[in-house]
Image (cartoon, rainbow, N blue to C red):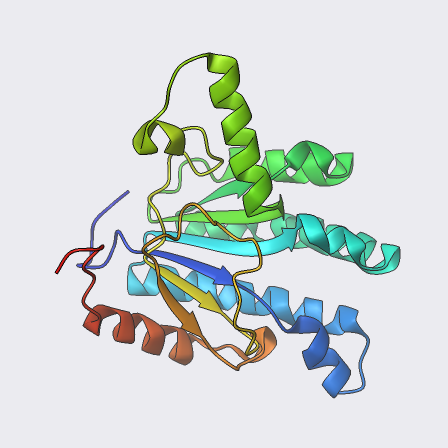
Length: 230
């Protein structure tokens, strides 16, 4: 990764919440909220490159989201496929490298093919590592890592255990943002956020702006991080 800014190594993770409520408040189908939410993703990715953020991880679909209606789940998977494909030229122009974490084998074949294509097309990106958590659950990630450790037959410490996680090559988040006013983590990056600075905003994801995003980053820069020290 290139270090063109004092904060170029910063890692921002975002729980993008509120698409459905945004649509329902306007008398629209929930799917309309998801469509607008994808446009906001594009804006925040471009804002991250502009600001010099080095790592951006977005919670797109959790292992619990399968509980939603089959119609909504199918729509989301089609939307993910279309968005990834259409956005590749802009990602390449902005030197963004894509990464996906979660139980990818549990996704539909057509979506897995799109993700694989996007990974290959953006592999040269060196300004921003954009990680999309899809069919992801923090507890499942930890259990999977534990089972890997058991199969290896060797003891692990914190550092070696981190290498068994889906995020093995990514630094822990510095900032975790959750939109929509909900005050919970929702099974996202449970191991990785031990010392992450948390920011909760009442703004629904479709209304989240670059200006609010930068304001949070500015607030983060003022916080003193002691990591358990004095």
